[in-house]
Image (cartoon, rainbow, N blue to C red; front, side):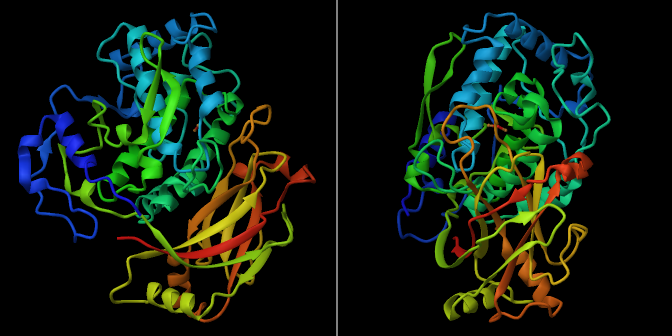
Amino acid sequence: MSRVPTNRRDFLKVLGLAAAGGAVACPGPGEPGPAPTPDPTPVPPGTKVRRDVNSLDPDGPEITAYKMGVQAMKGRPDANPLGWVAQARIHLDWCPHGNWFFLPWHRAYLYYFEQVCRAASGDQNFTLPYWNWTANPQIPAAFWGQGNPLFNSTRTAGPNSTASPEFVGQTVVDGILAINDFELFASSQASQQRQRTGTGRLEGTPHNYVHGFVGGEMGTFWSPLDPIFWLHHANVDRLWATWNESHANTTDLGWLNFTFQGNFVDTSGSPVDVQVEDVLSTVQLGYRYDTQPETIGPESLLLVSAGTVRETVAAETRGAAVFGREPLSVPLAPDTALHDKIRALTAPQGERPRATLRLAVEGVDVPEDPRTAVRVFLNCDYLSPDTPIDDPHYVGTFTFFHDPDAPHEGHVSKGSYLFNAAETLRKLRQQGQYQPGAPVQVQVIPVPLDGDPGLESVASQAVAPSGFSLSYVEYR
Ligand code: C2O
Protein backbone atom coordinates (compact mmCIF):
# COMPACT_ATOMS: atom_id res chain seq x y z
CA MET A 1 0.00 0.00 0.00
CA SER A 2 1.32 3.41 -0.87
CA ARG A 3 0.69 6.79 0.64
CA VAL A 4 0.64 10.33 -0.55
CA PRO A 5 2.04 12.37 2.30
CA THR A 6 1.77 15.58 0.30
CA ASN A 7 -1.91 15.22 -0.28
CA ARG A 8 -3.05 17.03 2.80
CA ARG A 9 -0.35 19.65 2.61
CA ASP A 10 -1.40 20.55 -0.93
CA PHE A 11 -4.97 20.69 0.21
CA LEU A 12 -4.09 23.18 2.93
CA LYS A 13 -2.08 25.20 0.45
CA VAL A 14 -5.11 25.56 -1.77
CA LEU A 15 -7.12 26.77 1.18
CA GLY A 16 -4.38 29.20 2.15
CA LEU A 17 -4.05 27.41 5.45
CA ALA A 18 -0.51 26.14 5.19
CA ALA A 19 0.39 28.54 7.99
CA ALA A 20 -1.59 26.30 10.34
CA GLY A 21 1.78 24.60 10.29
CA GLY A 22 3.37 21.89 12.32
CA ALA A 23 0.30 20.72 14.14
CA VAL A 24 -1.07 19.08 11.01
CA ALA A 25 2.01 17.24 9.76
CA CYS A 26 1.19 13.96 8.10
CA PRO A 27 2.48 10.70 9.41
CA GLY A 28 5.03 9.18 7.06
CA PRO A 29 4.99 5.53 6.09
CA GLY A 30 5.15 3.33 9.14
CA GLU A 31 4.56 6.13 11.60
CA PRO A 32 1.69 5.70 13.96
CA GLY A 33 -1.66 7.43 13.81
CA PRO A 34 -2.73 11.02 13.41
CA ALA A 35 -0.71 13.85 14.90
CA PRO A 36 -2.59 16.26 17.19
CA THR A 37 -5.23 17.95 15.09
CA PRO A 38 -5.98 21.65 15.10
CA ASP A 39 -9.45 23.02 15.73
CA PRO A 40 -11.78 22.68 12.77
CA THR A 41 -11.28 25.46 10.23
CA PRO A 42 -14.27 27.34 8.80
CA VAL A 43 -14.83 26.76 5.09
CA PRO A 44 -13.49 29.67 2.99
CA PRO A 45 -15.95 32.49 2.36
CA GLY A 46 -17.50 32.16 -1.07
CA THR A 47 -17.83 28.38 -0.84
CA LYS A 48 -21.03 27.67 -2.76
CA VAL A 49 -23.76 25.55 -1.20
CA ARG A 50 -25.59 22.74 -3.01
CA ARG A 51 -29.05 22.47 -1.48
CA ASP A 52 -31.77 19.87 -1.11
CA VAL A 53 -34.16 20.41 -4.04
CA ASN A 54 -37.09 19.70 -1.73
CA SER A 55 -36.11 22.65 0.45
CA LEU A 56 -36.29 25.04 -2.53
CA ASP A 57 -39.31 26.93 -3.79
CA PRO A 58 -40.17 25.48 -7.24
CA ASP A 59 -40.65 29.07 -8.44
CA GLY A 60 -37.69 30.46 -6.53
CA PRO A 61 -34.37 31.69 -7.94
CA GLU A 62 -32.44 28.39 -7.65
CA ILE A 63 -34.86 26.22 -9.65
CA THR A 64 -35.50 29.07 -12.07
CA ALA A 65 -31.76 29.34 -12.72
CA TYR A 66 -31.55 25.59 -13.39
CA LYS A 67 -34.45 25.83 -15.83
CA MET A 68 -32.82 28.74 -17.63
CA GLY A 69 -29.49 26.93 -17.82
CA VAL A 70 -31.01 23.69 -19.11
CA GLN A 71 -33.16 25.58 -21.61
CA ALA A 72 -30.18 27.49 -22.96
CA MET A 73 -28.04 24.35 -23.20
CA LYS A 74 -30.83 22.43 -24.96
CA GLY A 75 -31.01 25.25 -27.50
CA ARG A 76 -27.40 24.75 -28.58
CA PRO A 77 -26.50 22.53 -31.54
CA ASP A 78 -25.66 18.89 -30.73
CA ALA A 79 -22.04 19.41 -31.72
CA ASN A 80 -21.50 22.35 -29.36
CA PRO A 81 -19.48 20.96 -26.43
CA LEU A 82 -21.43 23.28 -24.10
CA GLY A 83 -24.78 21.98 -25.35
CA TRP A 84 -27.11 19.53 -23.65
CA VAL A 85 -26.47 16.57 -25.95
CA ALA A 86 -22.67 16.94 -25.97
CA GLN A 87 -22.64 17.11 -22.17
CA ALA A 88 -24.65 13.87 -22.01
CA ARG A 89 -22.42 12.24 -24.59
CA ILE A 90 -19.47 12.67 -22.22
CA HIS A 91 -21.21 10.13 -20.01
CA LEU A 92 -21.87 7.70 -22.83
CA ASP A 93 -18.27 7.90 -23.96
CA TRP A 94 -16.38 7.86 -20.67
CA CYS A 95 -18.31 7.10 -17.48
CA PRO A 96 -16.69 4.43 -15.31
CA HIS A 97 -19.02 2.02 -13.56
CA GLY A 98 -18.33 -1.00 -11.39
CA ASN A 99 -14.95 0.26 -10.25
CA TRP A 100 -13.37 2.77 -7.88
CA PHE A 101 -13.27 5.57 -10.47
CA PHE A 102 -17.05 5.80 -10.27
CA LEU A 103 -17.19 8.40 -7.47
CA PRO A 104 -14.35 10.76 -8.49
CA TRP A 105 -15.32 10.68 -12.17
CA HIS A 106 -18.92 11.64 -11.48
CA ARG A 107 -17.81 14.34 -9.02
CA ALA A 108 -15.62 15.90 -11.72
CA TYR A 109 -18.42 15.51 -14.28
CA LEU A 110 -20.84 17.42 -12.05
CA TYR A 111 -18.23 20.05 -11.23
CA TYR A 112 -17.69 21.00 -14.87
CA PHE A 113 -21.35 20.64 -15.80
CA GLU A 114 -22.33 22.95 -12.96
CA GLN A 115 -20.02 25.65 -14.31
CA VAL A 116 -21.28 25.27 -17.87
CA CYS A 117 -24.88 25.35 -16.65
CA ARG A 118 -24.20 28.34 -14.38
CA ALA A 119 -22.81 30.33 -17.28
CA ALA A 120 -25.76 29.29 -19.46
CA SER A 121 -28.27 30.24 -16.77
CA GLY A 122 -26.94 33.77 -16.45
CA ASP A 123 -27.14 33.42 -12.65
CA GLN A 124 -23.72 33.59 -11.03
CA ASN A 125 -25.16 32.12 -7.83
CA PHE A 126 -26.40 28.95 -9.45
CA THR A 127 -25.43 25.68 -7.80
CA LEU A 128 -26.76 22.21 -8.57
CA PRO A 129 -29.38 21.12 -6.09
CA TYR A 130 -29.42 17.48 -4.96
CA TRP A 131 -32.33 15.04 -4.80
CA ASN A 132 -32.36 13.24 -1.47
CA TRP A 133 -34.37 10.19 -2.54
CA THR A 134 -34.22 8.77 0.97
CA ALA A 135 -36.16 11.66 2.49
CA ASN A 136 -38.24 12.35 -0.63
CA PRO A 137 -38.59 9.17 -2.70
CA GLN A 138 -40.63 10.76 -5.51
CA ILE A 139 -39.22 12.68 -8.47
CA PRO A 140 -39.53 16.33 -7.35
CA ALA A 141 -42.54 18.31 -8.56
CA ALA A 142 -40.34 20.87 -10.33
CA PHE A 143 -39.36 18.15 -12.84
CA TRP A 144 -42.82 17.58 -14.26
CA GLY A 145 -45.01 19.30 -16.81
CA GLN A 146 -45.01 19.47 -20.62
CA GLY A 147 -42.90 22.35 -21.85
CA ASN A 148 -40.88 22.44 -18.65
CA PRO A 149 -37.17 22.18 -19.56
CA LEU A 150 -36.71 19.90 -16.52
CA PHE A 151 -39.27 17.39 -17.80
CA ASN A 152 -38.25 14.24 -19.67
CA SER A 153 -40.99 12.39 -21.52
CA THR A 154 -39.15 9.04 -21.61
CA ARG A 155 -39.42 8.36 -17.85
CA THR A 156 -41.29 5.23 -16.83
CA ALA A 157 -41.87 6.61 -13.31
CA GLY A 158 -44.72 9.08 -12.85
CA PRO A 159 -45.10 11.99 -10.44
CA ASN A 160 -46.57 9.65 -7.82
CA SER A 161 -44.20 6.70 -8.22
CA THR A 162 -42.26 6.12 -5.04
CA ALA A 163 -38.73 4.73 -4.86
CA SER A 164 -38.48 1.55 -2.80
CA PRO A 165 -36.98 1.66 0.71
CA GLU A 166 -35.24 -1.65 -0.13
CA PHE A 167 -32.77 0.48 -2.13
CA VAL A 168 -33.02 4.09 -0.96
CA GLY A 169 -34.40 3.77 2.58
CA GLN A 170 -32.74 5.22 5.67
CA THR A 171 -31.64 1.77 6.87
CA VAL A 172 -29.88 1.11 3.58
CA VAL A 173 -28.18 4.52 3.55
CA ASP A 174 -27.17 4.25 7.22
CA GLY A 175 -25.66 0.83 6.48
CA ILE A 176 -23.69 2.25 3.55
CA LEU A 177 -22.40 5.20 5.57
CA ALA A 178 -21.21 2.79 8.28
CA ILE A 179 -19.05 0.73 5.89
CA ASN A 180 -15.39 0.85 6.85
CA ASP A 181 -13.94 -0.78 3.78
CA PHE A 182 -13.33 1.76 0.97
CA GLU A 183 -13.92 -0.63 -1.91
CA LEU A 184 -17.06 -2.03 -0.35
CA PHE A 185 -18.32 1.56 -0.12
CA ALA A 186 -16.95 3.04 -3.33
CA SER A 187 -16.50 0.09 -5.75
CA SER A 188 -13.36 -1.93 -6.46
CA GLN A 189 -9.77 -1.46 -7.45
CA ALA A 190 -9.19 -1.18 -11.20
CA SER A 191 -6.36 0.01 -13.40
CA GLN A 192 -8.49 1.06 -16.37
CA GLN A 193 -11.29 3.56 -16.43
CA ARG A 194 -13.90 1.18 -17.80
CA GLN A 195 -12.84 -2.10 -16.31
CA ARG A 196 -15.65 -3.66 -14.27
CA THR A 197 -14.10 -5.15 -11.17
CA GLY A 198 -16.70 -4.88 -8.43
CA THR A 199 -19.66 -2.67 -7.68
CA GLY A 200 -19.76 -1.31 -4.15
CA ARG A 201 -22.86 -0.71 -2.07
CA LEU A 202 -23.42 2.96 -2.87
CA GLU A 203 -23.22 2.36 -6.60
CA GLY A 204 -24.87 -1.07 -6.73
CA THR A 205 -27.85 -0.38 -4.53
CA PRO A 206 -29.31 3.16 -4.38
CA HIS A 207 -27.37 4.53 -7.36
CA ASN A 208 -28.23 1.81 -9.87
CA TYR A 209 -31.74 1.49 -8.56
CA VAL A 210 -32.65 5.16 -9.02
CA HIS A 211 -31.57 5.00 -12.67
CA GLY A 212 -33.93 2.08 -13.26
CA PHE A 213 -36.68 3.53 -11.10
CA VAL A 214 -36.83 6.79 -13.08
CA GLY A 215 -36.47 4.71 -16.25
CA GLY A 216 -36.47 5.80 -19.88
CA GLU A 217 -33.27 7.60 -20.75
CA MET A 218 -32.31 7.61 -17.06
CA GLY A 219 -32.03 3.82 -17.28
CA THR A 220 -29.35 4.06 -19.96
CA PHE A 221 -25.91 5.56 -20.45
CA TRP A 222 -27.65 8.53 -22.08
CA SER A 223 -29.12 9.25 -18.62
CA PRO A 224 -27.76 12.84 -18.39
CA LEU A 225 -30.31 13.79 -21.05
CA ASP A 226 -32.82 13.74 -18.18
CA PRO A 227 -32.23 16.83 -16.00
CA ILE A 228 -32.92 14.74 -12.87
CA PHE A 229 -29.65 12.85 -13.55
CA TRP A 230 -27.55 15.74 -12.19
CA LEU A 231 -29.53 15.95 -8.96
CA HIS A 232 -29.38 12.18 -8.50
CA HIS A 233 -25.62 12.25 -8.83
CA ALA A 234 -25.32 15.29 -6.58
CA ASN A 235 -26.94 13.15 -3.89
CA VAL A 236 -24.53 10.27 -4.53
CA ASP A 237 -21.68 12.80 -4.34
CA ARG A 238 -23.11 14.19 -1.09
CA LEU A 239 -23.14 10.70 0.42
CA TRP A 240 -19.48 10.27 -0.50
CA ALA A 241 -18.66 13.62 1.17
CA THR A 242 -20.69 12.54 4.22
CA TRP A 243 -18.86 9.21 4.42
CA ASN A 244 -15.55 11.11 4.26
CA GLU A 245 -16.46 13.02 7.42
CA SER A 246 -15.56 9.86 9.31
CA HIS A 247 -13.81 7.57 6.80
CA ALA A 248 -10.79 8.09 4.59
CA ASN A 249 -10.47 7.12 0.97
CA THR A 250 -7.90 4.65 -0.22
CA THR A 251 -4.38 6.04 -0.51
CA ASP A 252 -3.50 3.71 -3.37
CA LEU A 253 -1.53 5.69 -5.96
CA GLY A 254 -3.22 3.81 -8.77
CA TRP A 255 -6.35 5.64 -7.69
CA LEU A 256 -4.99 9.00 -6.52
CA ASN A 257 -2.77 9.54 -9.57
CA PHE A 258 -5.23 8.30 -12.16
CA THR A 259 -6.09 10.96 -14.75
CA PHE A 260 -9.33 11.29 -16.67
CA GLN A 261 -7.86 12.63 -19.88
CA GLY A 262 -9.88 15.23 -21.72
CA ASN A 263 -13.19 13.72 -20.63
CA PHE A 264 -14.71 17.01 -19.48
CA VAL A 265 -14.85 20.53 -20.86
CA ASP A 266 -14.50 23.89 -19.15
CA THR A 267 -16.80 26.87 -19.73
CA SER A 268 -14.97 27.76 -22.93
CA GLY A 269 -15.60 24.28 -24.29
CA SER A 270 -11.94 23.19 -24.08
CA PRO A 271 -11.16 19.68 -22.85
CA VAL A 272 -9.63 19.39 -19.37
CA ASP A 273 -7.67 16.67 -17.59
CA VAL A 274 -8.68 15.76 -14.06
CA GLN A 275 -6.72 13.67 -11.63
CA VAL A 276 -8.55 11.75 -8.89
CA GLU A 277 -6.46 13.52 -6.27
CA ASP A 278 -7.86 16.87 -7.48
CA VAL A 279 -11.43 16.05 -6.54
CA LEU A 280 -11.18 14.58 -3.06
CA SER A 281 -12.51 17.63 -1.23
CA THR A 282 -15.71 19.40 -2.19
CA VAL A 283 -14.52 22.52 -0.36
CA GLN A 284 -11.36 22.53 -2.41
CA LEU A 285 -13.62 22.47 -5.46
CA GLY A 286 -15.49 25.47 -4.11
CA TYR A 287 -18.70 23.89 -2.85
CA ARG A 288 -20.25 22.03 0.03
CA TYR A 289 -23.61 20.40 0.61
CA ASP A 290 -26.03 21.99 3.05
CA THR A 291 -25.71 18.84 5.18
CA GLN A 292 -21.93 19.17 5.43
CA PRO A 293 -20.51 21.09 8.38
CA GLU A 294 -19.36 24.65 7.81
CA THR A 295 -15.98 23.71 9.12
CA ILE A 296 -13.33 21.42 7.72
CA GLY A 297 -12.41 18.67 10.11
CA PRO A 298 -8.85 17.89 9.03
CA GLU A 299 -8.60 14.76 11.13
CA SER A 300 -10.52 12.53 8.74
CA LEU A 301 -8.02 13.32 6.00
CA LEU A 302 -5.27 11.82 8.11
CA LEU A 303 -6.94 8.47 8.56
CA VAL A 304 -5.79 5.62 6.43
CA SER A 305 -8.45 3.03 5.85
CA ALA A 306 -7.34 1.32 2.69
CA GLY A 307 -8.35 -2.28 3.12
CA THR A 308 -5.93 -5.14 2.80
CA VAL A 309 -7.33 -8.50 1.82
CA ARG A 310 -6.01 -11.21 4.13
CA GLU A 311 -7.93 -14.42 3.63
CA THR A 312 -10.36 -15.45 0.92
CA VAL A 313 -12.55 -18.39 0.14
CA ALA A 314 -14.21 -18.68 -3.25
CA ALA A 315 -16.43 -21.11 -5.09
CA GLU A 316 -17.84 -21.35 -8.59
CA THR A 317 -21.59 -21.45 -8.82
CA ARG A 318 -22.26 -23.54 -11.97
CA GLY A 319 -25.89 -22.54 -12.06
CA ALA A 320 -28.39 -19.78 -12.35
CA ALA A 321 -31.08 -18.30 -10.17
CA VAL A 322 -34.36 -17.84 -11.99
CA PHE A 323 -37.36 -15.65 -11.17
CA GLY A 324 -39.88 -17.30 -8.91
CA ARG A 325 -37.96 -20.54 -8.51
CA GLU A 326 -35.51 -21.95 -6.00
CA PRO A 327 -32.68 -19.63 -5.04
CA LEU A 328 -29.16 -20.38 -6.22
CA SER A 329 -27.29 -21.59 -3.15
CA VAL A 330 -23.58 -22.35 -2.90
CA PRO A 331 -21.63 -23.31 0.21
CA LEU A 332 -18.34 -21.61 0.97
CA ALA A 333 -16.10 -23.55 3.31
CA PRO A 334 -13.50 -21.22 4.83
CA ASP A 335 -10.28 -22.80 6.08
CA THR A 336 -9.28 -22.62 9.75
CA ALA A 337 -7.37 -19.36 9.36
CA LEU A 338 -10.39 -17.62 7.88
CA HIS A 339 -12.74 -19.21 10.39
CA ASP A 340 -10.65 -17.83 13.23
CA LYS A 341 -10.91 -14.37 11.74
CA ILE A 342 -14.66 -14.69 11.22
CA ARG A 343 -15.03 -15.87 14.81
CA ALA A 344 -13.30 -12.75 16.11
CA LEU A 345 -15.19 -10.49 13.73
CA THR A 346 -18.62 -11.83 14.64
CA ALA A 347 -18.00 -11.96 18.38
CA PRO A 348 -21.20 -10.96 20.16
CA GLN A 349 -19.37 -8.49 22.37
CA GLY A 350 -15.97 -7.07 23.22
CA GLU A 351 -13.22 -5.68 21.03
CA ARG A 352 -13.65 -6.62 17.41
CA PRO A 353 -10.83 -6.39 14.87
CA ARG A 354 -10.88 -3.44 12.47
CA ALA A 355 -11.93 -5.53 9.54
CA THR A 356 -14.79 -6.43 7.24
CA LEU A 357 -15.95 -9.62 5.65
CA ARG A 358 -16.42 -8.71 2.00
CA LEU A 359 -18.85 -10.91 0.13
CA ALA A 360 -18.60 -10.77 -3.67
CA VAL A 361 -21.25 -12.04 -6.04
CA GLU A 362 -19.03 -12.43 -9.08
CA GLY A 363 -19.32 -12.43 -12.84
CA VAL A 364 -22.97 -11.41 -13.12
CA ASP A 365 -24.32 -10.69 -16.58
CA VAL A 366 -26.96 -8.01 -16.93
CA PRO A 367 -30.25 -9.91 -17.35
CA GLU A 368 -32.30 -9.52 -20.50
CA ASP A 369 -34.52 -7.03 -18.73
CA PRO A 370 -32.31 -4.94 -16.45
CA ARG A 371 -35.37 -4.10 -14.32
CA THR A 372 -34.39 -7.05 -12.20
CA ALA A 373 -33.16 -6.91 -8.63
CA VAL A 374 -31.11 -9.61 -6.95
CA ARG A 375 -31.42 -10.30 -3.22
CA VAL A 376 -28.55 -11.88 -1.35
CA PHE A 377 -28.99 -14.04 1.75
CA LEU A 378 -26.80 -16.29 3.90
CA ASN A 379 -27.73 -19.68 5.41
CA CYS A 380 -31.48 -19.36 4.93
CA ASP A 381 -33.14 -22.83 4.68
CA TYR A 382 -36.55 -21.46 3.79
CA LEU A 383 -35.52 -18.78 1.28
CA SER A 384 -38.18 -17.93 -1.32
CA PRO A 385 -39.06 -14.84 -3.37
CA ASP A 386 -41.39 -13.94 -0.49
CA THR A 387 -38.77 -13.98 2.25
CA PRO A 388 -38.86 -10.42 3.62
CA ILE A 389 -35.81 -8.21 3.62
CA ASP A 390 -35.98 -7.76 7.39
CA ASP A 391 -35.24 -11.48 7.74
CA PRO A 392 -32.01 -11.93 9.75
CA HIS A 393 -30.44 -13.94 6.88
CA TYR A 394 -30.75 -11.01 4.45
CA VAL A 395 -27.53 -9.33 3.33
CA GLY A 396 -28.64 -6.84 0.69
CA THR A 397 -30.00 -6.27 -2.81
CA PHE A 398 -28.34 -5.09 -5.97
CA THR A 399 -29.70 -4.03 -9.31
CA PHE A 400 -28.36 -3.23 -12.75
CA PHE A 401 -27.59 -0.16 -14.80
CA HIS A 402 -26.54 -0.48 -18.38
CA ASP A 403 -27.28 0.73 -21.84
CA PRO A 404 -28.68 -2.04 -24.00
CA ASP A 405 -27.95 -0.04 -27.14
CA ALA A 406 -24.46 1.08 -26.29
CA PRO A 407 -21.98 -0.14 -28.85
CA HIS A 408 -19.10 0.49 -26.48
CA GLU A 409 -16.95 -2.13 -24.93
CA GLY A 410 -17.46 -2.53 -21.21
CA HIS A 411 -21.10 -1.59 -20.94
CA VAL A 412 -22.46 -5.10 -20.85
CA SER A 413 -19.51 -6.95 -19.46
CA LYS A 414 -20.01 -9.14 -16.42
CA GLY A 415 -19.74 -7.41 -13.09
CA SER A 416 -19.30 -8.29 -9.45
CA TYR A 417 -21.33 -6.89 -6.57
CA LEU A 418 -19.95 -6.44 -3.08
CA PHE A 419 -21.61 -6.79 0.32
CA ASN A 420 -20.71 -6.74 3.97
CA ALA A 421 -21.28 -10.27 5.28
CA ALA A 422 -20.00 -9.59 8.79
CA GLU A 423 -23.18 -7.86 9.98
CA THR A 424 -25.45 -10.69 8.87
CA LEU A 425 -23.22 -13.43 10.29
CA ARG A 426 -22.99 -11.56 13.59
CA LYS A 427 -26.78 -11.39 13.80
CA LEU A 428 -27.16 -15.06 12.87
CA ARG A 429 -24.54 -16.09 15.39
CA GLN A 430 -26.33 -14.15 18.12
CA GLN A 431 -29.52 -16.01 17.26
CA GLY A 432 -27.74 -19.37 17.24
CA GLN A 433 -28.19 -19.79 13.48
CA TYR A 434 -24.54 -19.66 12.56
CA GLN A 435 -21.50 -21.23 14.20
CA PRO A 436 -18.06 -20.14 13.04
CA GLY A 437 -16.46 -23.29 11.69
CA ALA A 438 -19.51 -24.29 9.67
CA PRO A 439 -19.71 -23.54 5.94
CA VAL A 440 -21.45 -20.35 4.86
CA GLN A 441 -24.25 -20.86 2.37
CA VAL A 442 -24.40 -17.91 -0.05
CA GLN A 443 -27.76 -17.49 -1.75
CA VAL A 444 -29.12 -15.24 -4.47
CA ILE A 445 -32.68 -14.86 -5.64
CA PRO A 446 -33.85 -12.55 -8.44
CA VAL A 447 -37.00 -10.49 -7.96
CA PRO A 448 -38.72 -8.08 -10.33
CA LEU A 449 -37.65 -4.49 -9.69
CA ASP A 450 -40.44 -2.72 -7.80
CA GLY A 451 -42.49 -5.91 -7.96
CA ASP A 452 -43.26 -5.16 -11.63
CA PRO A 453 -45.58 -8.07 -12.52
CA GLY A 454 -44.85 -7.65 -16.25
CA LEU A 455 -41.38 -8.99 -15.69
CA GLU A 456 -42.55 -12.33 -14.28
CA SER A 457 -43.54 -13.40 -17.77
CA VAL A 458 -40.09 -12.86 -19.22
CA ALA A 459 -39.13 -16.51 -19.15
CA SER A 460 -35.42 -15.89 -19.42
CA GLN A 461 -34.99 -13.70 -16.34
CA ALA A 462 -32.12 -15.71 -15.01
CA VAL A 463 -29.21 -14.37 -13.04
CA ALA A 464 -26.10 -16.49 -13.26
CA PRO A 465 -23.15 -15.36 -11.19
CA SER A 466 -19.95 -17.20 -12.05
CA GLY A 467 -18.97 -17.49 -8.41
CA PHE A 468 -19.07 -16.22 -4.85
CA SER A 469 -16.25 -15.25 -2.55
CA LEU A 470 -15.80 -14.17 1.01
CA SER A 471 -12.74 -12.10 1.92
CA TYR A 472 -11.49 -10.88 5.22
CA VAL A 473 -10.38 -7.30 4.70
CA GLU A 474 -8.39 -5.41 7.30
CA TYR A 475 -8.27 -1.65 7.41
CA ARG A 476 -6.57 0.80 9.70
CU1 C2O B 1 -22.51 7.15 -14.78
CU2 C2O B 1 -25.42 7.22 -12.42
O1 C2O B 1 -24.26 7.22 -13.92
